[in-house]
Length: 311
Image 1: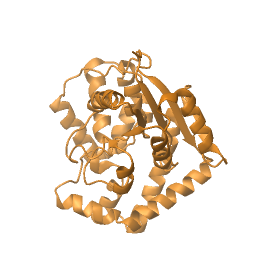
Image 2: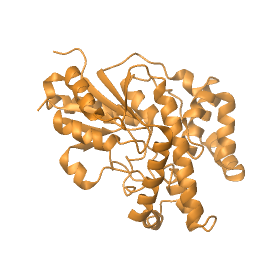
Image 3: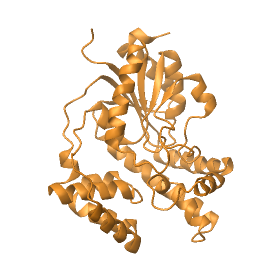
């Protein structure tokens, strides 16, 4: 019996092409895809989170998509626990688990067995932080976190209010930064990391085109449906890139053109943070997706690491 279960991890910035590659690899290596995206867990949020389409999900089994409603306070420790179970289930079927996504904390919490801080919720502290953000903006909350825990702040978008407050809550209770409490036990799996990248200007252009496509696909209508169901305001899900900006348009704060430009700008900044996170991991094999033959090279690397799954 193998000491560690196999795990293929595919990471990279948004819009770089992770979905297309993961589908190809899954079909070649009996793979099942586990989403490593913190927003794809939410139901009814399809366009703005760039979920795999129903047709793509019909080609290959997908996991950790559409598992909770948008008002559910889903956490990284829940993600960690559920994905570990999924990896074991997939391996027991003789298939290759593939963790695919761009949420660095979520992915690494699984691969490196983060020991997450056992700090109970402090309702009074959380209410105080929410009030501060309501009065001074999410950026003020983000700046407060940056003063006490710059490492965690650098990984979180200023609009990710719930996770910013959680990191502040941990510091408030423990007196040490949230990032210092995430101890690594080393890799828990027989892991192969594949990282996708491309020249920055080309990536930014792909991001811009993706946002335009999201608008054409009906992102405004998707946000309207969510609001009609009662999902709005300060929910973590509705603070996600794309959803927050469209809400501001619907509430009359921005024109549609201003909202679209804000989504593009915010997504470009997000991609930069994603790359910064993953560049720290020395075990990642990086591939430039603009280079001819990169797909064949990746297939060879995966076949060399996991020869037992080739169809």
